[in-house]
Length: 167
Image 1 (tube, rainbow, N blue to C red):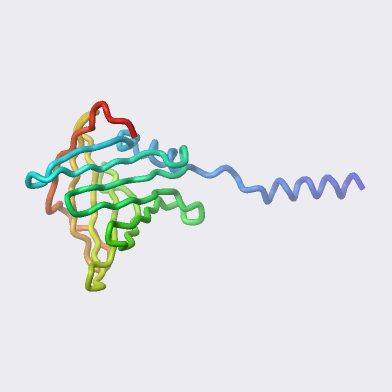
Image 2 (cartoon, rainbow, N blue to C red; image 1 turned 120 degrees about the horizontal axis):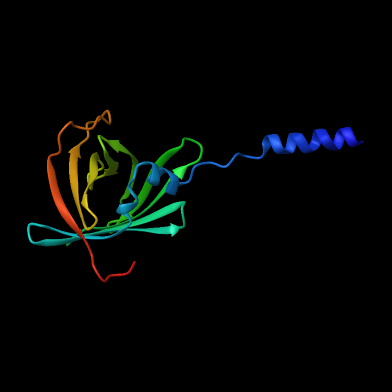
């Protein structure tokens, strides 16, 4: 009987999942903890706000993007099955956006895909370059139909960390 219990205990330990990396671990590995916060910028005189905060500590980041005519809420998490960082969100027109996070040179980059009003699929890359503790640069890249990101950005904008605002 002792042998059976011992074998049962060993088998149970063998099938208990080993601790997996969390999203916070992936962000720390990329040295990108600075991305969490409220960022404000300007495009042609129009205010843009991008916010990242922990919706579920260490496991799910929430993001909110707001400009004059666009607003998007998304969730970002580590897919335990693929070990990929994925993002899913919806905009103020009800359109779904999906994306994946990975490196672009030494910057974290989101490759985002959505359908436009005509049903055409559009993708873009958004790389985040840290300038200093309170300033970042967003670099927008073209992504072709095969998912290949262009070598050079088409557009960039600086954003400043919002001071005195709480998430």
